[in-house]
Length: 348
Image (cartoon, rainbow, N blue to C red):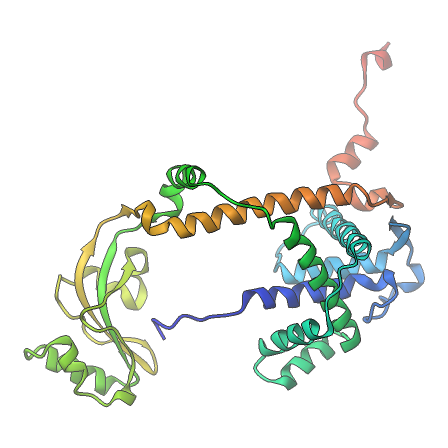
């Protein structure tokens, strides 16, 4: 529906992505599940992380997974070294987090793992769809549980790094002043009453009543409640910015104040009426109205910086040995290596 918000549990969808990625690169730890590539006979170690060899086939699988997840198009050979390096960096971070979690004795309980498996499963339409997904990706349930356990432990570790993060009123006001033109500006648009119906007859009937001196609330009350998909009472309004006045909603840009639109077909089973309650000019939203959002954004920013610094420090503790430098070298580095710049000493 036009007004219905599609709510998704982003946290656990992201956890699925992390888990699939983790399982796809854990072959070098001994519990990969997808099997070797067709060129396994030519496989070789491209790097060592914490003494563990990383095979070229493992890197190639991980790169393919990354490209597919990120929906990267028009990938060129120049892009590959950077993606290989990102994949290697992820392995280093995982090794660092794994070592720290083990050293600190952080471990998720079976109940926590069960809860998160259920949360992940709930993101699929049916239990069978979830099973088909993990089977299609070659994921065993034991590996999934172990990956969930590792991720939960690492999340707990990273959350502990940010426990003391806080912001002051002065920081919040400065952030607001610096960014209000970007984050806290309401664009121009219209305040509207909206009614949506499952069939055109109901919408046309309400429109007829409105044009014959029925009030907004009275007219909508004359149709069967089962025909009403969404209804915003007269005393409430919904703001729609001008940028949304395209395609079906384009007629709203010409709607006079207190005028009712013609029936607009949003979809084959969604017919809407709009009552213009007044145009709204672009304006900055007052600090008092958005202080909660400002605080949340600042805390999130500080938490991100704290976690990044923590990860950078942890990465420095992991021993990394590159066995195939050419795989991770950018074209510029390769070119410079093949064609070194001549110095004055060389010319002499």
